[in-house]
Amino acid sequence: MELLRKYQLKQKDFLKLQDYIETYIGIKMPQEKKEFLESRLRKRLVYLGYDNYSQYCEYLFSHPDKSEFILLHDLVTTHKTDFFREIEHFDVLKKIVLPEMVQNKSHQDQTPFLLWSAGCSTGEEVYTIAMIAADFSFLHQNFSFKVLGSDISEDVLAKARKGIYDEEQILDIPENFRKRYLLKHKDSHQKIYRIVPNLRNLTQFSMYNLHQSKGHFIRHIDVIFCRNVIIYFKRDHQIQILAHLISHLRPMGYLFLGHAESVNYRNLGLSKIDSSVYQKRK
Ligand SMILES: C[S@@+](CC[C@H](N)C(=O)[O-])C[C@H]1O[C@@H](n2cnc3c(N)ncnc32)[C@H](O)[C@@H]1O
Image (cartoon, rainbow, N blue to C red):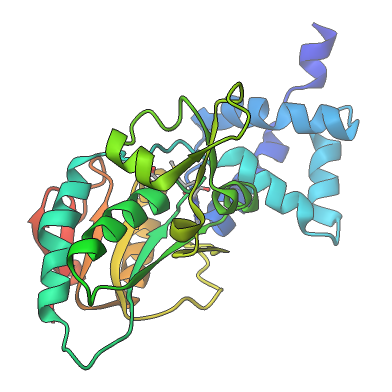
């Protein structure tokens, strides 16, 4: 009982954290999520040796070193992802989007196509896009590309850059792609796989806060995947983020959102080409 009281998040501390999370990260933190926040932060509190959440909040907000905020981002954001998640999108990418991109590119233009996974988590989405694009490039000699991955969490980005996954994580990768794009650990007892260097070299990861949009990001992107990210944001923040993403897209570029993410796409200057796949109008 004593332990439970000790680790109870007081309303005044919840409000401070709520304000920071909603203002800086942009994700919704309504009153109903107080217990969720409490449980996500408890381990950290214990690790730092604090007796209660007020001490933790004082440390967080008065400490000049911003590193604790980075850890907070990791604790409050949801990082669930998979290879080939919402698989129909990769069919649209392969059969509609990439062929149209090649068809519309002038022969003089030698610049590689840019595909961006915004809110990429641990990299599975980036490497799935890269596998599909690399496969496509075997049949289309003049098709070159780079896949950019960005996230607010440094922790997931570090994992994404390594490109190392365990057996369970790679189950959704089709067999032919596993053979081509994964290397098994030398020790056969270790069921660990790494994305091959040739594919990793076609990717680039960086920290980018979609809500604050402070970092400068490359413009004239050909395809943006921002799936299962805006669902955690308030409606007005969702619209701001989408408008910002669309400003980075070249005219006739494509935007993929998560299947559960609905938008008033016409107001954003988009046309719908498939389920949660949009194209920026000229
Ligand atoms: C549920 S994962 C989705 C991963 C992947 N896009 C997918 O669909 O499988 C959401 C990711 O968005 C990131 N995220 C949340 N808020 C963000 C923000 N303000 N700026 C950038 N990334 C953010 C989280 O850190 C997390 O890794």
